[in-house]
Image 1: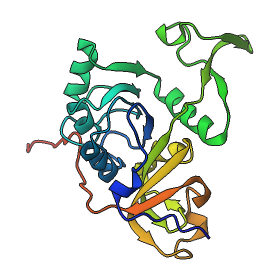
Image 2 (image 1 turned 90 degrees about the vertical axis):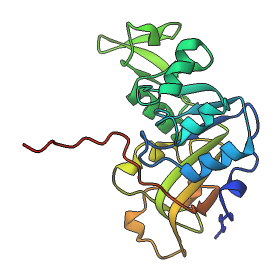
Image 3 (image 1 turned 135 degrees about the vertical axis):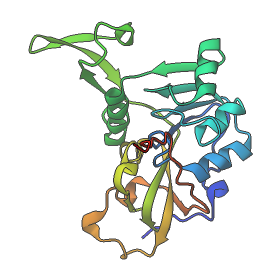
Image 4 (image 1 turned 90 degrees about the horizontal axis):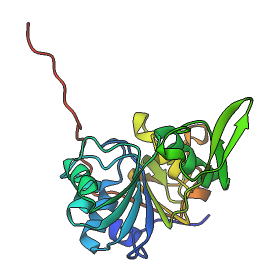
Length: 233
């Protein structure tokens, strides 16, 4: 078995250079690889293209990279919770490729499975379909979408072992699952790193063959993106 452990986030992101394309798992603040993102901020790497469902909030996660102008293009399905993301997009400072959420997930999964392209009805008749091939299936128009091509994929898991087997917890599975193995190199950041043989094979979500580097994060914040409470009657 190949031991894929690296010491920390800084070592995990070694090789990520200016101008590269990264996939980053998570949904809002749930399941984001925060230690890896912090290491990217400290590295001062720039001109990144980031594929992520959204950019979370201004002062956490991908919002930190946006504040330092390290991202030149975001490929996402949602902007709403990050004011700086919205400001940079509307001012033209940041190139943004908005994609239907299901299409974004499938473009990741297709890359993971080695499928170069697929047809989907999502987006037909909108700006999303401009310049794309259209075919009818059962009388319904579908547009051709290509799988993503990324240099690195960075995912976050609950548990992992030395050979890269991963288990996600609850909704933190989100985009981490289809992004694992969907790039040339996949980095897995885990909350708990265990010995091989410790994880129940029936509970493993991602097999180690899809992971090239794995490390245990030093700290994790359990932030709530939008706290909603009921007032006393």
